[in-house]
Image (cartoon, rainbow, N blue to C red; front, side, top):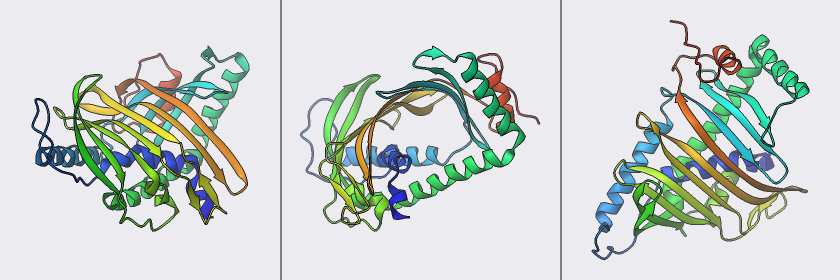
Length: 294
């Protein structure tokens, strides 16, 4: 169903990967201390986005980390391990309180079900792969969707970064529902020039976006997303902070999205770790990683 193409998970993936493809325009920037010429700025963007693209396609550096997700109604903290079989997670706390006995038993039963029925994990992995295919299709279109302009150096959390603004390319015509929201998004992109990595993306919906003339759904004007990433060790970069506020209607159902996510305590795990070993790790001593069998 076309309406299914604008569910929150797919939209979130669009926003996460927005900075990984770009075209630049504008007049040369005035030569001031710490600023870049247009040519140097465009070169920096191209190199940084090429690095992001390579890393997005590289599965050889899986991580273990904690995800704290907060909304007006619920706060949850999970420990997550990336494996060759897809992601595996364990719920640790709700509303910043440890799980009670009943909730812990339910969580252990869920993990037991994953261990005893590999088809459940295979189904989850297929979902992850399906999302990745959609994202790759979007990435092929994004160079035509946006125009970027260099605005100068700014002070970021880890030092000076180069700042760009982006806006929709007026000549871009979205070919399907999945790319339609791109015609309404403007914002800022920050790049760490020393390591040539994207450190921050902030995007805002400047107008309502209708799907199927508003019959199938609508993204309302005023929604916004903030994504920040940083180095987590070993020259590996990961997303550390996400805020998302959107008002989304799909057919006759309205969903208000208001979430903030913090990803912390990143640590590498073996590239050949399977999902069963990850479950045992999540059940074991904190910080202990089950080594994959050779």
